[in-house]
Length: 154
Length: 110
Image 1 (cartoon, one colour):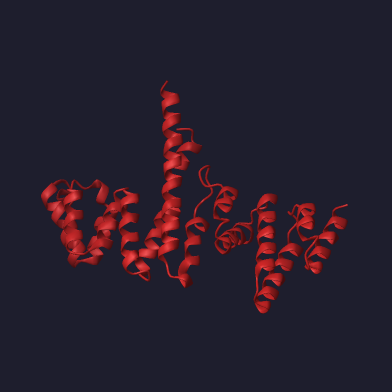
Image 2 (cartoon, helix red, strand yellow; image 1 turned 180 degrees about the horizontal axis):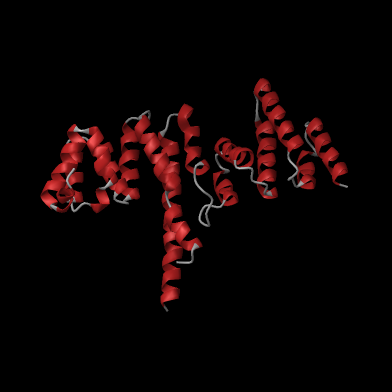
């Protein structure tokens, strides 16, 4: 009985911790001037992974603010050296979306360069899924890198 | 600071208020021992807020484990001035650490 009630308490406490962090993250993001908004990502990059704040779960909730989500994933992969295939593929997907939506040619080339570097250096991508996403786009060079990865895998 | 001071409620309440107003270094040192002190927290908070020392009031809440109340004060400050560096850093620091102690308890199956 004590175990069950402490478990219920644990779950409700975890959920309230989680809600509080997300509520104030969105509040802070809304308040800060546009040039400072990216600072909000530190709430999650400085947080130690825990059952309440799993990296993939954080990334999924951040995806509606793509720039913040990308910064979070880059930190998780480059600084924390996380080798989760889901996280690496998630970042690759966001790179593709960002490139396809970017109107500024100079910036677009810069992001493409970062994306290529990322693809060349990681071995944790769901390659077939990404090939599917790039199939009908103009990103032929990136597609070639992925096909190259398929060949080295076999 | 005499340890005796920490157990006399009126004196320690005054120590928190006055150090917050006049002695930044003493206030920082008081904050680290706040949980050992027998002081009137709500009285201190009210006093600090009346004198527009919202940041210090938030610090008192934070060191007493009332994270939500402290973050709430800092975000209110930021609503008036979005560039307030100390408030931005404090909110981020509190939220980054929030839930960690509790998660460790879960991992140890408490």
